[in-house]
Image (cartoon, rainbow, N blue to C red; front, side, top):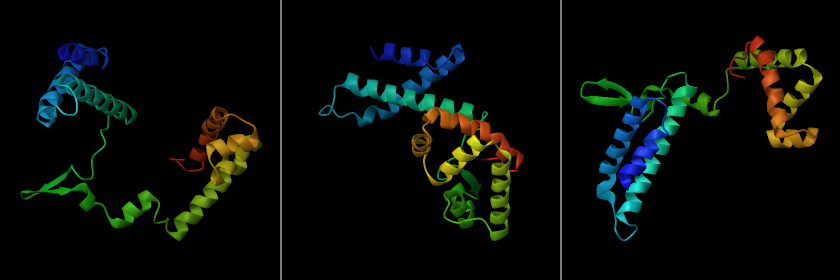
Length: 178
């Protein structure tokens, strides 16, 4: 029964026979790794192993989607990945400065000159776009997509479409990750 489930989960992983074989192998490895954690008081063996296989398949699909979204670049873990110094693995989290971490999390702002330049670029982009797009963007500066849609009598889909139309204005103003 488990073998059929693993084969079925592997089949939905992709059209390539190599992808299916790799997925099937990963699923079997996960089942074998987790077998020691089985507790008969909590579930039957078949249920436990089926859950492990299904959960692993979901993780593999998520990893594959993430890899596709990142143009083949696999994200690194700040805790598991790093550089080897002597015989010790230095996690990436130790190589990132606290200022970089603060900026990434939004805790630290830009320096005043960069902040002024960014504000001017945003104002320039807003000035160049049609009134409808400008209004959507201004509402999103102070609220959510749902609140902007509600206030403007639009659907959330229409707000997202307006954002897609506004994106080139921000890109032309030098705000690449707008």
